[in-house]
Amino acid sequence: MFNRNDNVPENDKLQEDFAGMDRYITAPADLKAAAKSGLPLRRAGVSRRVHIRRFSKAIAVYAVCALLLVGIAFTLPLFDLGKTPASSVDSTTSSTDTPTNPSANIVLPPARRKEPEAKAQWITPPTFSQGRAAADAVVHLRVGNWLGDDKIHTFYDATILEVYSGTIEESITLLQAGSLQTCTYADYPLFVYGDEFVLFLKKATSTDSPYENAYYICGGPICTIQVYYNAEGEQFVEDSFYFISNQHLPLEVQAISSHLFPNPPGAEYASLGAVYLGNTKLYKLSDIVPYLNGTAEDLPIQSPCYAKRIWSFPHSYDSESSLLFSVTVPELGNAVIEQKEDGIYINDEKFLGGLGYGCESFYLADVNGDSKPELCFGTMLGSGIVHSSIEIFDFETKKCIFYLSDRMNYDYHLFVRNGVLCVKEIEYRKTEVNRTGMLIHDGTQVSVLWDSEVNATPDRDTSPAS
Image (cartoon, rainbow, N blue to C red; front, side, top):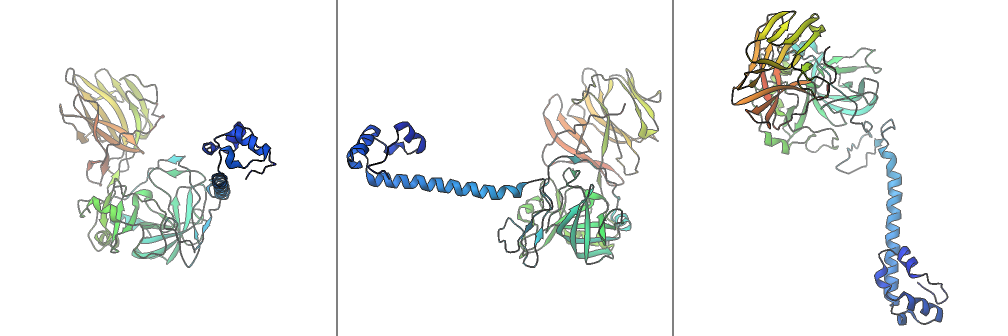
């Protein structure tokens, strides 16, 4: 409030100090004269009551801003990605966004950077029975506190909820592939307190873990099956990596995913784990239990076909600019595979060819589960009417084990996404991608599992064979 002895600032200083409040300073010259002469402010065109009210509001605004700055100053350390170990969450926290547990503090992993990411090529057993044979125990467990990580593993406490096969202690240390120190894996988020999974577990050695009673996951992400609950407490499993064959199981309606929760009803904590429930398959947990414990005959496991690009034309990340190529392939005994004017040659013997025949891409992938790479070609055939097809051959027998073609209706092209060999379908004589999918095998046959949405993003692979 101005006093008759105050030096009233000039109009421009008033504007600067009380930005946004200039609407009540209607006569700055009169205001200055009034202050000097001792006249009441109301005679200078300014109401004392209005002035006090507006000035009080300004003080309130400055106070709120100051409180916000103090709050930010205290909050910023919580987001320091470089700090370890992770902060504990107090058990008295009641927010639905923060996990709580009345019996103990919850230790969460530190914030994790998106990069770097690795593309691992896990070997997966082709059947549940072989998976059980490879594992010490098949269990349903709940992830507990984060314990720490080394260069390749992250460690957690875990509680066993159900044992389907084998024997195991009630509480264990769980090893997950991926680490804050080195890398995480694409589409495979690191676990968080409260996550529940069905896992194939193998006892870890002392070189794998500094913790006693530690277990790692057989098969890695492909054999990682997350468990969810509906409002009635029924349990569902999510097959994000499509390794369960739905030829033997009833597939749940996709719409149910919007009604699933990562924790059982009434749980005293809330999981902060990643919820996929997108491009995925859902089953009732009870439907796969007979295959987990061995009371049913068997359930085939289908696997994505992880691939290595050998050559493609044109490729946007290197200098390949010719349909003709010659590469040496170490995985095939240093076989020399060439594209010449009249076809494809292996060690100087003609393998594929014909009038108007050409190869636009060449990949290696184990597409039949025999642990040996097959020859995967994207081919073109024709002169005036050219169509694109996919042909996959067994290298040893030279027999075609998969062929995808629909002449003059659709063209099919190979590409690699997240390390998996995928297919693009494009309507004939058009450029827009109609649908995409990944190649999978179940130990007996190869097929395309089409995506629920078009995803034609290729890997940035800059290292083809030479």
